[in-house]
Length: 110
Image 1: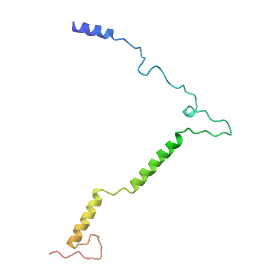
Image 2: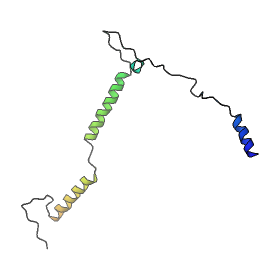
Image 3: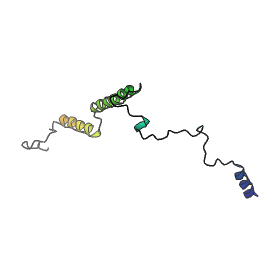
Image 4: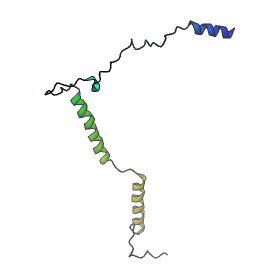
């Protein structure tokens, strides 16, 4: 009984036969063979820019330059840098040298 009711309910679902109606019908641009669907200008004429193109160039490349400058001047927050500075500070407090110099004998141990 349960199986027959589920089969009946599946048959009641309308089939769309592969059509999708949520996008308000089929809309697409036919391929023209031109790059970005733009026809090349006639010989001797320049391509006219659209109003948004300069804004895009300034925004895109300007943000890349700002990001590069920001990364170049980013503070060094690595654990190795902190550990080296901390080791130098502690060794100077004890009176030891933090740089190895081959001609200087090590301090005498007590």
